[in-house]
Length: 519
Image (cartoon, rainbow, N blue to C red; front, side, top):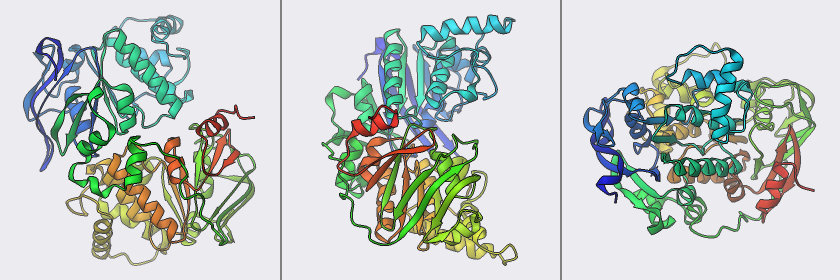
């Protein structure tokens, strides 16, 4: 518990409703100044709503939010910033065409006029003081994701923030990027900033946070709890609650870090059938989503999960685009289930059994402004003739049946996809892509931003597809996840597959291959 004299942020009976949906219900919680606090819970628990309410982006229907004992006006971003609250969103809000200096100045209160050189000189000092390794003259679009996040945090601190909230800051980071972020968070704590991290991974909570607060269904379950007095098993029980029994015991250990995990998976079960994916000497032209592929060879057998490890931006997206008919192939061949598909259109590849769980569920996977049944039905529409007769009533019924099978929590199939939590949105994509006709499933970052229960659900679904004879290409920035799920792992570096590994896996060797340091 926190002492009244040390409280920096206090919420008193905060409630937030979106129509009939209760996002937060009478939340009362207080955070001590100068500490690192974690806020955790399943998807839809109210974590992001809490962060947005404190930052003034959401107006609570009742209750008070106080900073240093003074109430800040609800739904007022300017008032929250003046009180010392800054929020860094999971999806960065940096203008890609701006330079770093222009981005920093855009977020500053000082509206003085500077020359370009003067502006860059001014903000380079700020960046250097925060140990952000970037030139103030660089364009945002040219920066790797870890650096973009560092700039986002530096911009948030322009206003001398006393409370910095980071919403899912590790979701887009490699393990190395996460370690660097945590170093930066500790340095912020040393200069007196109170940091609130919204996290999903229990091992990260216990590694960085002084306290942890658990939300479930918009309610406070417990907290702030001193992390020195709680272990991973107990924290997972608080997060998942009565649904803990649905999480596989081995998955729970892997997800929470509550037990030593050998990363042996199934010790590569024999896959004697012909490959469902056979990529030979594949090269592509320059692609907007990453470096061109350079003579990539990759085979996936029926009933096999092959993981792709690598620092983000080393060709993983280009590989997915090439297999999905979205990138221009300059050399090599792609075969699906024994049929050459190198020049085939997307429709032909889908009819051959290709399914894709895309990198960005809210951008590539779903149309947030369309209904659930429209999002689910797009698979059928892609595979039918353009002249085929469409019966919306039939599609709504089939969608309803599919979403029920996949345990999607929703009101009706006519609600907008944007109203769902991250876990339920991902289940809609799974319900659409993992049908009985699937032969090759590309799962690109399928658990990013998901809680323990939803992550275990995705893993279990992929394993069931594997046992039905599907081949699965599994891409993740989380090495622990890759080693826990996959039968075989390949490493991508600068558009090439540089090494392949089989279980039992060696984390150091895979990490060395990812950074080009392996011998």
